[in-house]
Image (cartoon, rainbow, N blue to C red; front, side, top):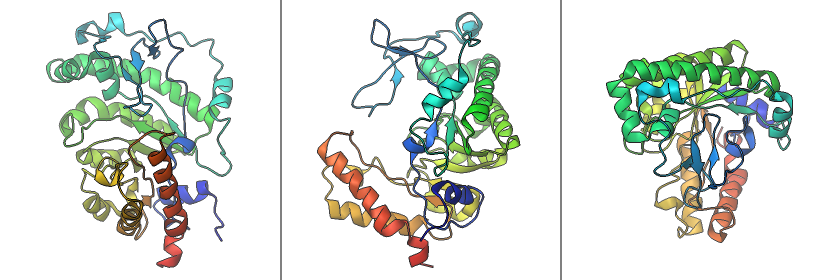
Length: 330
């Protein structure tokens, strides 16, 4: 019989301690933030606070991406003329927090507050080709833009800390593709890390843990995350050397995920028993000595029969095999 709540147990893991039971990282139930987009415009697109247009599709599984072919900023040297912070003087932060948390259970579940990023914001504004070229050709202008964005994100972070009362703060910046990082570790340290560090310090000084959301093969940045005080990483995709990472960092960096959610094992036609065995092997690989939170998924969308059935199987394996793993394998 567990004595700790989901929140207490997960925070124990983030603090480098052994959990009472294996935590299941529930990304959608635990994460909360301020609204990222306004209402759809006449063109059907939604826009962020700066005016970048986004759309979604079934293929993106509900994720919002910049409207294809729509470039918000075509010249990094002109960012001061184009990128303008909105006037937020009349925003009711308390009401927005109440709305964001209305389906959460902060007494029992951790609240992980999320904010915007820097690298991805630049890519969303300029597109990947021009955005990456700007980082190489005009690093001073990119740094100046990130410095400007930092004021906006830090103000939002202060709102999150005051009104959301989060247990953890999630830095979010997808700086890597599936097989390689988009930028070098040196470029990250020069142009992105200073601003991630500002946000991490604000959270840590408020007694809030810091986790990192970074997809793709981003392991070259881990030492910098650790340096900033990050103690958890999601989704920790399998193109990284996760076994080596766990061996190197131990409980200093919690692997929140580490499941192959893009490979054949997660395809809709995978037999259920094969998926069940793979999930048990996944738990056996990462659970020993802590530093791990179960988070698995399959390819597809809610409402599709194979997806819904397999997601139920993922939860079933967690309940029946994963949750009490430490008690049964102690």
